[in-house]
Image 1 (cartoon, rainbow, N blue to C red):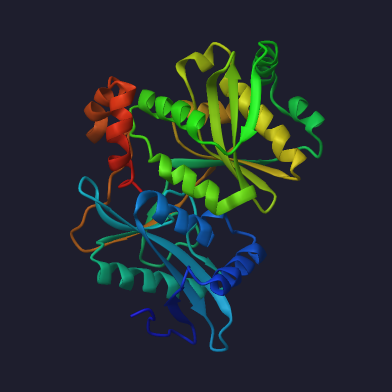
Image 2: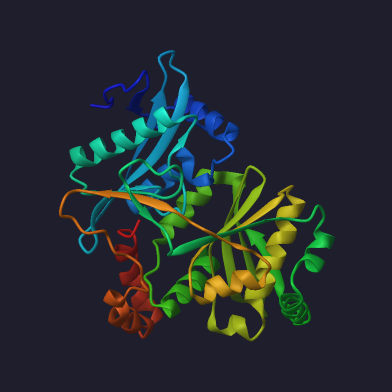
Amino acid sequence: MNAFAPVAGVAVRIADREDAGERERIETFIAAHPDAQPFHSPRWSLAVERGCGQRGHYLLAEDSSGNLVGLLPLTEVRSRLFGAVLVSTGFGVGGGILAHHEVAAASLADAAWSLSQRLGCPTVELRGGSIPPGWRRCEGAYAGFVRALPDEDGGILPSIPRKQRAEIRRALGFGLDVSIGRGTRHHYRVYSESVRNLGTPVFPRALFEAMLEAFGDDADILTISKDGRPLSSVLSFYFQGTVYPYWGGGTAEARTWRANELIYYELMRHAVRRGCTRFDFGRSKLGTGAFAFKKNWGFEPQPLVYAERAADGVPPREINPLSPKYRMQVAAWKRLPLWLANRLGPSIARGLG
C-alpha cells in the first residue's frame, strides 16, 4: 500500500524513485525551495540504498489538483546493535520535511509515523525542517556552520581570521600537492584512518562510490598529498550554489604539514571557481575539536534542531559516540589495527544511519 489517507485536501504517497519522470518532478520542486539540501534529492536516497543496503522510502504530498506541495525522504535503518528506525535523511545531517505549508508538513509527519508502524520501526527521526506538533524536540547537541564565499578566490585568504590564515600560509610553504578527482582509493585510506583515530567505525567504501555515481559532476574528492603520500582528503557535494565538504579527514601526519588547513582553503578556491557562493562546513557536536576548528575559520555556529517520535515505552536511540555509554568501546576502537577496523567498521556503521 503506497498511499495514506488524505488530510485537509493533501494526499501523501510513496514515490517511485526509479521512475525518471518522478525523479525529475521531485528535483524541480527541490530546486525551487529555499530550504532544500542535497539530502532531499532522490539521488541521495538511492545512493544510501545501493551503498549501505538500507532501504529508502520517499514520501510526496500532493494537493487536490495533483500539485506537489511537500516531500520527505526516509531511510529504513536496521541494525542489530542500534535497532530499527526511520531517518530523514539516512546518513545525512539534514533532509527533514520540505513543504509549502503547514498542512502538507503535518500530513507528511503523520504519514512517516504510519509508515514506521507498518515497517516495525519504533522510532522516526527528522533531521531539520519543521517540528511536527507533539514530536520530541532534539536540540543542544549539534551546530551547523555556514557562511558566504568571496566572489573571487583571491578574496578567500583575507576573509579568514588571522590565526587560521597564518596556518594556511605555513601549509602553502610546504610544497604540498593538491588533486581533485573522483577515485575513492586514497580518500578511503585517509578517511578510514581518521575515523579510526576518533574511535568510530568507518562507512562502507561502496557508500562513497554510490554517492559519486549518483551526483555525477555535483560531487568530487579533493586530496592533499606530500611526496605522493595522501595526507588529507574530503568528498564534497555542490548543490544550488553551496559546497558541502562532507566526508573528510586526515592522517596523523597531516598535522605536521598543516594539510587539514590547506584542504579547506583549496576547497573554497575550487568552489568559487565552480560558481559557488556559500560554504557549508557541516555539523559538529558542541564541545568537540571539530566545533572549535570550524569557529577558528570564522564560521558562527547555528544550533541545529531535530525532531523525534517513538512508540510508547521506547527510549530514544543513542548513537552519539560521545555518550558515556560508548566510552569504553570508543577507547578500544582507537587501538585497533587499521586493517581490522576497516574490516569490522562498515557492518557497524551502515546501521548508524
